[in-house]
Length: 506
Image (tube, rainbow, N blue to C red; front, side):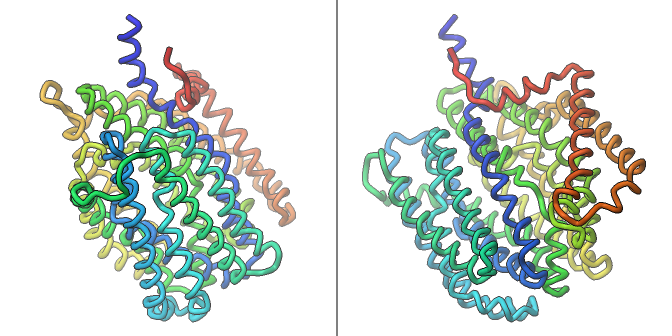
């Protein structure tokens, strides 16, 4: 009996392994979120738009140039007897990718500055190139630990790294050094992180630093996913580039505030997806793949109880949220923000993690190819006729198309010869239904609150504490309403939270 429990329990409690990662990201989320909030208040609007444009370029390269090699560690390390070659060749590859990224920044920043009609970008060519190189080179740090099941160590690294990065970006601006001080500070941080990556990642593993046969195998696996990223990241960021080329930097700052999202992906989706990938690899190795669909439904159900209320609250309380966090000068961003939060709902199903864990990376590539094909005409028509609103609507529609394409392929990835699956078999319908009813009811209460108290809030001073009062009241009302409806439908929210905590299997 005890042996049987030891075999079954990990399948139902694997999400507990993500607990340290979730808690670490939750702690640092406040610091991470504080970056655009602080900068919005201390930087001039034009310089704030320039900040977003600089990091749009760096982020695009950071997500494209790894070419799926770092992410392939989730597939290879759980199955590998000798881990050091996989880690070493990934480090070498990413150092080369960093040098390529720096060269691209140096060569392309001029044309990009003309596209954005913002010559101020050229003042930051050198620090942006250095930051991109070092940040790319340090990409394997957390992933190398998580893919080996070292979630506590990975959580600690996330905690320290995110905290230092937030301080490196915020402190110079608070001290009056402006955007120039910020850029020099993040270069120093990225340099320290790069050194730490080479010190931490290869430790405790045996074997040579690289092995040619394994390197070819890793590239073959990573290539479809890497090619998908070559399509996916430019496609996901295309609306930012198109809007930036169509409006002044100060107006672009409004658009970026409208597209602001709380770091829910880093907090819940990413660690849950990462642990799910490792779990599926373990199940496949043990010949128990039929349990994979249960793991997927469990992960999706937990994410539904978190993401559906978050999206509903942000949609309902958008004016209070934008006014409190960014200031009333950004209230023009509220309609854009309400459209952008729909992306949170689309993150409920960790489909890409399943496909990557099962080696179905071509399906991911085809999904992104479809999204890219849809995005081009949508953006051209949307921005031309609807302006900035057309940009964010185009992004949401393309995301719906891409997620639908991935969903169609997940059943095959989780099926076994004895148990073929369909789409309806993998979705946690009960959890989705209960979370939706509770979230919609609570959002309706927030709309009623605004209608009844609007006059009382209009005369409040501009300071953050005053503007936070209506947001706090709306949040409390939403929380009470959401929890109350969940209890009425038989769901115990504390048990849902417990599923995200680490627990031992006896």
